[in-house]
Length: 132
Image (cartoon, rainbow, N blue to C red; front, side):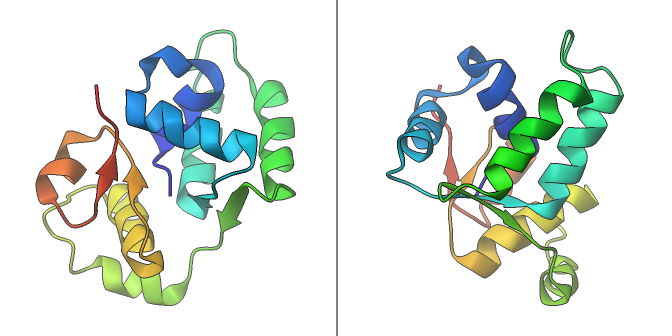
């Protein structure tokens, strides 16, 4: 499972990824791993582009990549399930609702989360994949 910053950096700034995160995305790109992409991550990624937070990257660049992921065997766009939303209320160690939903999704699926987010890592509610 991927967090928003990890997905964006994997596409547009891979040098910002930690070594384990780079390996996870490389494995998915090679077809030997599957990365789940929560609906919240897709929404946040679109928002990042709309707000111009990745200079030189626009929605016109992003949308075809998201469409490729949607039809890929290596990336799975995950719907936001009501049971995940309901479970997220217990994750009070994570104040941001979107991060809570992403972590709740990883817990629900029993997968590690590719994330550098210090709050998520400190909460230790899910195994994170990053390395420096």
